Image (cartoon, rainbow, N blue to C red; front, side, top):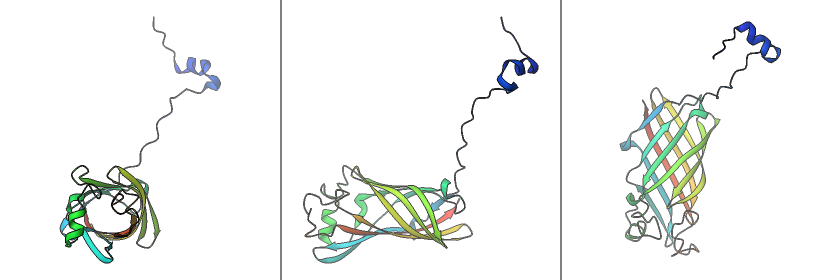
Length: 196
């Protein structure tokens, strides 16, 4: 048998006449606008020293899911996927070694992944992203300072980070002491994107 209580009866039953309500989950922040990368005007490049000489290279392609609003940084993020087998320097020795198992091991681990965990404004057009970079199942924290210029629906981003190749498992067996290849690798990110 069902018993229906009116509002007055409920007020007598519940303490202090307050109606009990289940707590509502906090609303997730609305996602920031999506930005579509222009591959022809965007590039992820790297530089280090190999066998005592400067070597500069780049990845032939990458994809990125970018959501960004300078007024809503908590709702902003970026996830970047980089095909490691596309790394090229134009020099025979590095290009022969980079896809090999001791370096990128591109056959077993075809993609590197960078995902932001937080983005901070530093003033003006300067920002810094905290993120996680995963290469060959090795994940390291990365801070990426960058500048960002937004004009209408177009944005230009430039950032630079220095990575430790040993921490990422690159050349760890063949050159752990960095006798041939520097441990430090500078990565430059240049992105041109359009707001969707």
